[in-house]
Image 1 (cartoon, one colour):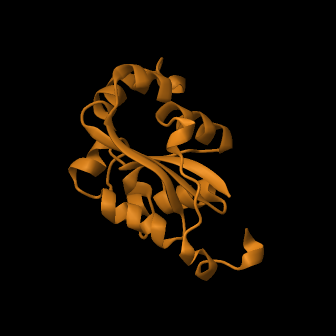
Image 2 (image 1 turned 60 degrees about the horizontal axis):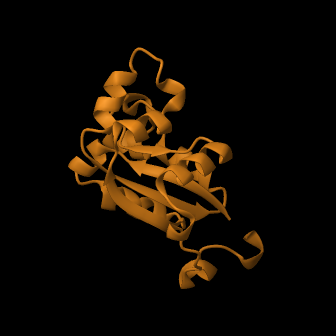
Image 3 (image 1 turned 30 degrees about the vertical axis):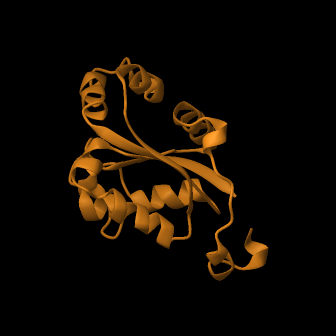
Length: 153
């Protein structure tokens, strides 16, 4: 099983789309192993977006991501990182295919609802930023045997 980090951004929370979007991940067979609501501080924003801090547009990103509550979560499943990224769609909502989360609910580059880790190292780093190891819950939903064959993981 692979784990990935997702962040329901302030626009997602304010638009009351968290439940609807979370349900799409669960419907796909991904398990929620951690979740909490918080407000991101400027310090946490700089840690999360460390590769962007020196870019000219970073202050706008920081103002957005610290501007309201977010919901952080860890999802687990087969190829979870790739699956989540494909479900999210292109970064800019206007370029995202219909049927993807951003294609269905976003028309913005910045206000694109959900962040998802872009690789295994990023997922590990981002999970550690938002969750203590003891906040991650290992479990096997009883529905798993109806979601994939036993030899699929």
